[in-house]
Image 1 (cartoon, rainbow, N blue to C red):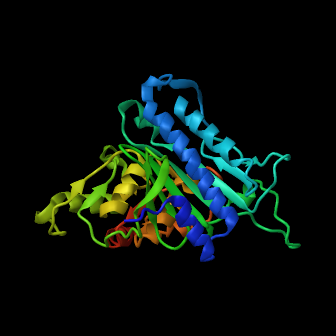
Image 2 (image 1 turned 180 degrees about the horizontal axis):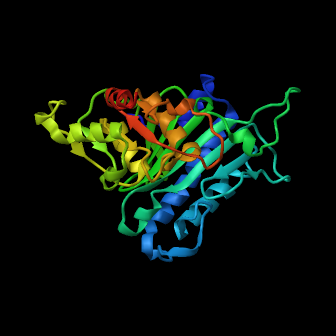
Image 3 (image 1 turned 135 degrees about the vertical axis):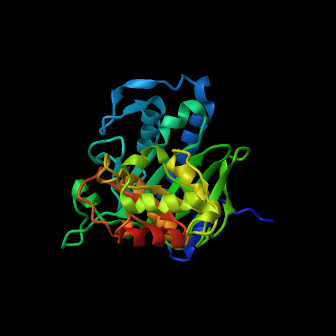
Length: 333
């Protein structure tokens, strides 16, 4: 059976006018950077150790060495290609414009360089999440200055989104608005090969993912939903549920894409706006989930319709199998 590589897949999308050449090159560049991060993650403690740094990121969180290295790999890979106007990372306070000695393009790139990095030391899957927007234009047709305001677009304006999972295998998941496709890294040829064509999420599920240590702080609708799941066949749902929680969003979402389920990181008494970042985590994952037939809300509003007011804005996230997300949302209403 003929194997389709990521490059072949993207060229075909370009020929069908789903994407243009610049977006194809941008995605290929991101994928190459993910290969480099994957290699570094796989070396583990054999490289220079995993320990934390004495610095914090813009959120006051301790950075792992791999957080910083992954951020640098993505920045250096993407600043010179000529298809970006600017890029911004969860690890950076402000957007980084493209250096003046490089050509400037039409796209904006947002990324979480190493999602789930708290799991590095215990050899659990981590990953990279990215989102691509178009740079807004001025009235005369020229591109706007690529400042913070240019990035503050609702998620429905994304032209591409994806993530990589660095686990037993490295998987690159992508949408350009015409479905969701997965590619596995072939270690012998060092190429991404399509292994998950046209991913679809089942509408029903018997699996949920949530951090139950926060149960005492949950809002009533979330507590009601989880309580019903835990009652299993003896409760109103009439079926048993399994709970899964990796504490690495890329791994949890990839499981939902692979076999259905619902992933929840709701707002609570401690995190009143939610815990995950809208621009770097919620928006790209919501775009992917919807393209695979699922749904994604913050409990009240479709995530892709949320109007961002800051680069590092947080929000609640409930995504996955359509019927389960609809149920949780109805409880909030």
